[in-house]
Length: 465
Image (cartoon, rainbow, N blue to C red; front, side, top):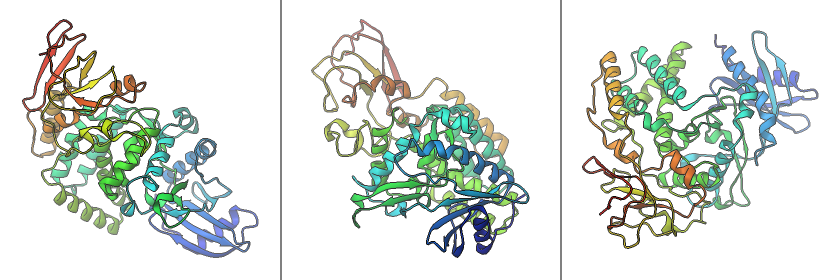
């Protein structure tokens, strides 16, 4: 059961009861930060500022309790401020009203986030630091922990619930199901994530009014922290920031992470942003919130019109090498950094050894000591397509993509997790187009022609020309 929103005066009274010596003189409600909690900023007679958060349901209260157990551990391990509970008061039905000292800084507007070194790069580094945390911290605090396959199936179950409302456009259901049925997109390493990162929950500080001097000083709103898909923390950013700003964040993030971002992170970030609309609809239906239902339906209809005929695919990455913004040699990033986000027409090879070279296309004079080719699609692609048609048939939505789709070819240009782990020790090596001379193959190669959708297996001793 969801409680009705509490008035600002009620929240101020709860804050006063929770913290000894807190004598409120003003209160300001906070809207948009979290629709499952009542939030207000309170100023007391000693000119101190506080934030009070009160859950609206038992489920929201449980999430707040898990976050309260996690936050003290995060504060010791992250280079920015994490709000710490100053006091609480037990609520009549379930949960506690929790009060935190208000942290300094200015909230961010992702739509105005500038690209390049500065605030966007600082955001990427902050995300990298969060995702580098030890998952055992989250597990011991009692927050949810998911592996990649369980998380994918959780999304599919979420779609089934949304379809049950009868209000989600069929084209959107088909679009999301195809993205979820392609298991190649869901081979990520679970990370310790914030869970609902947005500009309202980020606080930045500046030396002056120049965005280049911006730095992240605090992050709030950890109620949905979990071990899950790192792409979730990019969902709101992807939907609101410019492509250039997003790429800056992702580049700084890649340079901070212990593990290289997987090839489909951006695609899943976009999907996560779209699925937020589904959660809002289901939440409004459960709470019999007519206004929330109408807003969610309008947003879903706008999205359906915007993406009609467009599938979610794993595009060629704009970021190919880990490294801080501004430090990487632009030549090492190669043509993938500026290439249009579409399927390639030539084979793609990742070189393992030898000196760093400028990525190039066409014939090469130097022999390749060892090479791997990322295949067009994994062996389960056909089964995925069949599974997708089965789900479409159950829902009455049209079945599509009877053969390998262009999304699989686009996804093939991004390095796999296994490749990233082997390349971590040699960051100077970038992705380059296949050098096809007459050199002798020294280990198994799979030469993929993404235009013809063919794969040639070359074994040790074969001539690659």
